[in-house]
Image (cartoon, rainbow, N blue to C red; front, top):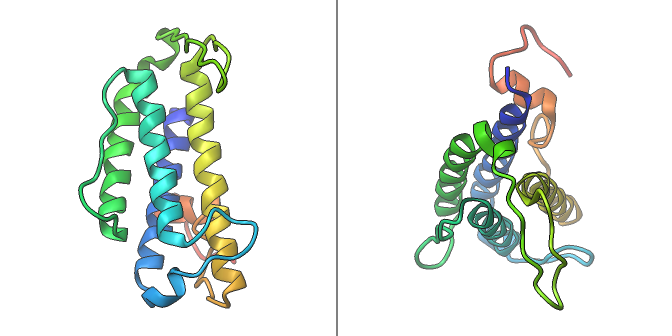
Length: 167
């Protein structure tokens, strides 16, 4: 098992699971924002997924993929599928890239081994916003059914790698 690839599979699975769950909720609840978060749920997903495309484009040199029209939970889930495929193509040779991110005055300094930094940032950024979305749901009184979609145990079970029940 390639641990780095598994981490990105989990990352995509957790994002898609939360997208699917949120798509099942009444739209009015999803338009609300709570203090201390990025904002309403759908724009938070769009921000997180868009930022990951930007990170991928920096490492690959390819233009970031962009959805057309207003984002929906379904269109964002499709974007996550495409991102997973992009990471699958990129990860096997990522350590051989030795990509240096040039400095952007006023934004960031030059960064050596930026391919690794962007991979770490993609996982961190996605986790941060999934946590904000779960926090928003909780503060709005919207229950999350079953295991948490950010839970590695739930991912392992969904992948068929755990036998029997767990709580």
